Structure formats: structure tokens, C-alpha cells
Image (cartoon, rainbow, N blue to C red; front, side, top):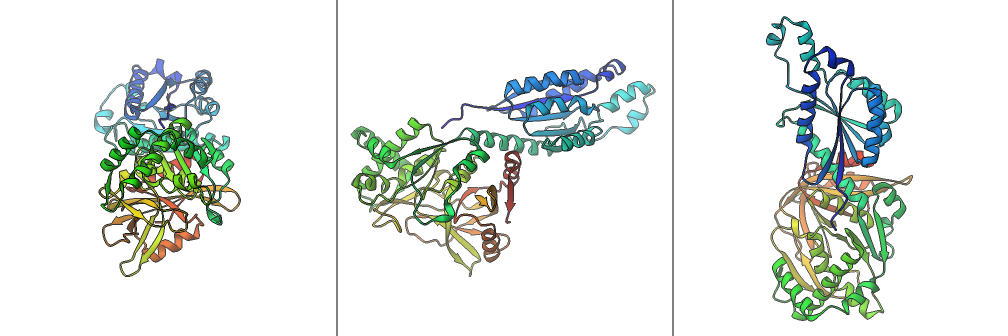
Length: 477
């Protein structure tokens, strides 16, 4: 699903109108600095609404209305020089979106000798005011705190090479992911795995926290679409399987075609309902068509994962949300749970039956036939993969006592080595605090037994996403 709602970033600078007549060239200089800020924030897939320099309370009121009409998702406030807090408050108060304060000087320091050698003190003051970015920030912070406005501060230099721009970029990325979640359509097909009480969640709470829409439908709809799949579509999908997967010799043509029928039907279902993710499970016992559908779904859902339509088995809504978050950050998001521990090597093995995420697999995913799905009805083709060796981030959406959602994450490493070759996703993970302490700290927070895994260490981005969503984030390691 392509999000047709681009992230809209509001941008404005602030100054004091009384300065312009007093200090020649100051306003033009600050306006150029604001253009530099816009250039450094710009990305192809976002829209920037730049309202220019706001230098009076009257203009601030107009700007607040402009941002509101423009439907901005986040605001960057560039503090160009000293400005009154009354120039700022009306802008962000009406927009009602998170605010990032940019305290960015034109250079890392003033050339004191050159500056002090100037004889014109008015000119000196005009130059100094271009470096006076930090001065009004406490005033702004004071007013924002007292008015209950969430804000975050970034300090640095306008130079694009300055470290502050990495932080700015992460705020934009986090805002983009929040925007994806606000517009995501999560499909709920079937029902919960009976007795898995930890995965049950309040769907309204999910919508209140992340936004989006949840489309509830029956497995029968997918089964009905399967009946209309043509022989040509089946043949094309089998070829797609052969390109995407490492299909083992003991996989029969009949099973490949059965999985192909379901994969084609899944594609059509996703398009019809405009889904960006899905949580699914259905026992299938007693209804042959539905059993046939669910026992041939793994390859198709693995392909969907690779296309950004994240799919979580066992009707795991919370993990489907976590997977979508990681995938939206571009780091994958594979469905997983504890498999076993290797205390000898001090690693935890995590994995799961069902679909894997093609984009973060170590090599091609293997396809193997299974005679039985443990704890489930049916038999058919399954996938076996390990997550790429290197840095990883684990993410879980947890539902806390008292009815609040939070993010739980841990950073570790995926390592090559012995795994259980049972036709499931399976990887070895090492954590800085050791296997025993990791499990103790992770489990203490009360997550469901599933979680999502992505490649790379992205806690700093997840932390910003949590701030934008106004929820807690807990880092285990």
C-alpha cells in the first residue's frame, strides 16, 4: 500500500521586527539562513510548508491559521535571532502538532578578533544578533511548558556536515513513520489463536495510539478469491517463487501450485482492501476450503513482507504494528519468538513458523515441505531463513497495566552459526548484557511472546517516534 498522504513539515523562523530598521542587512541574512535550513530538511517524499520569518504577534496569528489549513504533521522552529515568545506561541498553539526547536548558529563561533576590530558598534551588534540563536530558547521553552506544548530542542550549526542534521533527519524519518501508521490499513483475518491470552489487545486503543484503520474480514473471502485464480496466474506466481526463494528438491509441484493460488489471491485481497499490513489466524478445522487456504499461505505472505505489506501470524495485532513500524523505517520487521537458548555460547535463538521477511534474510529463503504445522491444522510449504548477520533491533508493542501502549526495544547482533533447520525462521542473537540478563529484563516488561526484528540499531529513531506518538519507550539494552 502506497501512502498517498505525504508528510507535511511546517517550517518558520523567528525574529524581532524592531531589529530590521536598526541593523542593515540582518533580515536578509536571517532569511538566507532559513533557506539553508529548508534545504537541509528537504527530502523527495515530504512537503515543506515554509512560512518565512515571523517577527510580530500579528504575523504569528496568521501563521498559526496557515499551518492549520496546511495540515502540517510536525513543525520545525528555526530560532534565527532573539524574538519574543509572543511571536512564537500563536503559531504552534493553533497547529497542535509536535514542535522541534532548531537552535542553529551560522558558524560554530564568532571570529572574536575580526569582530572586535570593527569600529562601528551598530554593525557589530547586527552581526552578533545573527549568532544570538540561543538567547530566546529558554523563554520559548518556559512558555511551551506552561502551555502544555510538547517540544524538542536541537542545538548545532547550519553547516550541513554538522552532527545536528543527523538528529534532524531522524526526526523527519520518525515523523514519516508516524504518518504511515496514521494512514495504515491493518487487515484482521480470522480470529485469535485460542488461549493465547498475552496477544489479545484493545483494537480501539491501537487506533487511538497509532491511528489508521483496522479492516476485519473472514478467511472465507480469501478462499472465495482462490476459486477464481487462472492457470496463467498460477504459472506466473510459481515463476515468481523460483526467483524469490531457494526451493528445495523435495517440494512438489502440486504444493507449489497450491501456494501460488493462495499468493495470487492474497495479492488481490490486499489490493481490494488497500492493506498495508495484516494479522491473521484461523483454525480451519472442518472446512476443507479454509484449511486449504491457511495451510498454503506462508509463501504468499513472505512475498508480501518483502513488498512492505507486513503479515503477522496467530492474529498478533501488536506485533503486526511493530513489524509495520520497523518496515516503515526501512529495516525489515520479521515475526519472531524465543526458540531456545544456547547458554554455552551465551546467545538466544529466536524465530517462528510462518512467513519471513525477504529483505532481511541471510541469502535466499529456503522453501521446505512440512508434514505438520506444530499446534495448527494442515501441512504444506514453509520457509526457512536466518536474519542477516549484523546489528539488529527487537521491537514489541506492549499493552501495560492501566490501559496504555508502550514500545519495548533491544539492540543486539545476529550471528552466523548453528540453528535448528526445521523449516522455520531461526537466528542466533547476542546481547551486550548476556542471554540470561536480556531475557530477565525483556520479560519483566510483560510483552507478548512474539516480537518484531529489524536490521541495524535504530533505537534513537524509535525514541523519537515514541515522543511523537506520546507513548513510553523502554530500552532493555
